[in-house]
Amino acid sequence: MVNIMSRIILCIDMDAFFASVEQKANPRLRGKAIGVIGSGARTVITTASYEARKFGVKTGMNIWEAKKACPHLILVIANNARYTHTCKGLEEIYSRFTPDVEIYSIDEAFLDVTATHHLFGGPEEIGRSIKRSIKEAFGINCTVGIAPNILLAKLVSDIAKPDGLRWIKPEDVEGLMEDLPVKELWGIGAKITERLAVLGIRTCGELGRAPSSLLRSKFGIYGETLKAMGKGICSRHVQAKPEDARSIGHSMTLPRDIRERKEIEAYLFKLSEMVGRRARKHGYMGKTIVLVIRYADFETFSRQSMLLDFTNDTHDVYEGAITLLNGIHLKDKIRLLGVSLSTLIHDPHQLPLIEEERKRKAVLRAMDYVNDRYGEFKLTWGSYIAREREAGVISPSWKPSGVKSVHLK
DNA sequence: TCTGGGGTCCTAGGACCC
DNA sequence: TCTGGGGTCCTAGGACCC
Image 1 (tube, chains in turn yellow, blue, brown):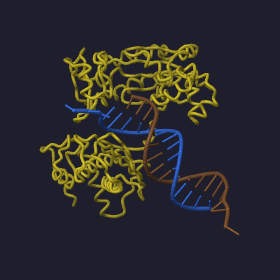
Image 2: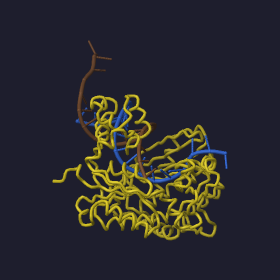
Image 3: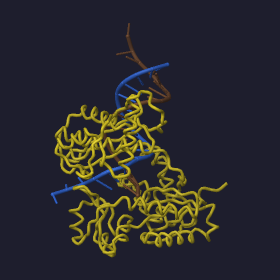
Image 4: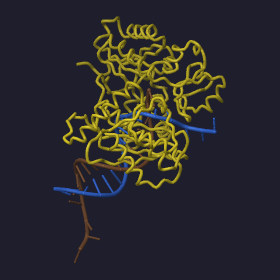
């Protein structure tokens, strides 16, 4: 039996992933301060190149702040297809070294090489091979952290950034943790950092030595985990098989704050369609509908309710969202709307019993097919287009040449 | 022209049931 | 005529992550 502390885990983290991919794709951007942003009018910086970070440009900044920090910043609209394509290629590279690969996010992965590292000349040699392969295939850099568990591998990759490779062995863990600020740990954010500071705990060393009773009384069940984290202990394994999703949702900050009912409905329909289509594509059905609203003053809240049956039908999601909306007295203009579907199960693919329902499902499948091939909202319900025009709203992806009408019979 | 979008997990309180 | 307690489901909000 293998001790959990003696595992060998690699954390592979792309350096400024979206920005690096854009710089590789467009030579004129190389060596320049760039910021990758969304397409909306009120977007923020998603990723800043290292050249831009030198000027203080950070993820989450709005355009205005970013430009103030770095006037020559070049803004590039995100190209998600490029990033997902690259991500798939990365997965292929990782799988050469171990079957235990967890794609944690689009730019981060964990590899458990405990059983295979000896076949490739050891953990560091695997790290070097991966860095080389990624550079050759995609022209981008990454950082590799190697450690006895996921928490430490992630920590070490953060420390070694950018373009780094570092291996922390079990005997080095204590020394590394002693003076490390607790905020550096994965799972400790601003709030917990603040609450720990009140207790006089600032470093991981202090956290690891703090009395269990104190931590338990302040943080409940999470107190034990915190103490273990302070000592660099983590029992979470690399999960090669993705877990089933718990929720599927979409939200959008609107081009401008709105209050008008027809406009709200048009956006809710659009979001419901995005949610329904994704659920159908991935074979999920859900029972809980969640509506999220953010007012102009940024106050954000949600309302949810359970349906009688599981669904992934756009119209059911939309009707659920409208019912929730009807229960809210809007006190201000709306800045953001979100719709999500949770309490998910796998769609059993049962043939609907009722003929009319069967026809509608066939139409949904046809719409999904066309939308997948030609992009979102090229094809949509006639009622939605009518609604959109009526409300005078042009959605970002709405193109006159792409609009076709659909006949439901 | 101030502040994106996609998630997960946990907690607390109320409803409801036995 | 005063009154328990446990368990589960549901909702709303918050912390955290990329």
